[in-house]
Length: 121
Image 1 (tube, rainbow, N blue to C red):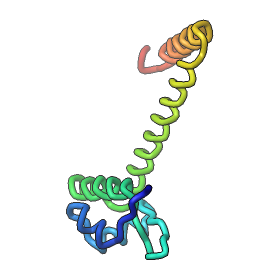
Image 2: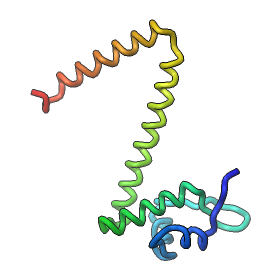
Image 3: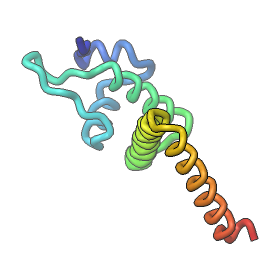
Image 4: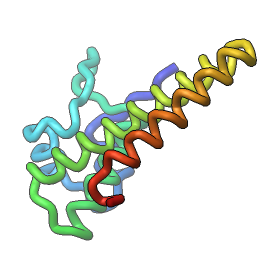
């Protein structure tokens, strides 16, 4: 079962998070609370994102628009990692001959792209 946290709980659990900063993250759409009968609520993943946001804002003095871009890139990377993990599981479930053809094709594509890369010239 998913645990939800109130705004007060979130602010007390995330180091250096204040109500104005949380409001700024919400307005910038970096964080989106879920709606519950008790009001806006936050998931465990939101707490982790908020801690990362606060740490980035503090350490690098990043404005909200930069934080939005950084979090978007992190989200894209996490999605790509999940897709790659699923693809690897799908390939692993295939027979040996299919896995062998996939491995050969991937190596060929990587070599072609390395040869096409101007930085390798």
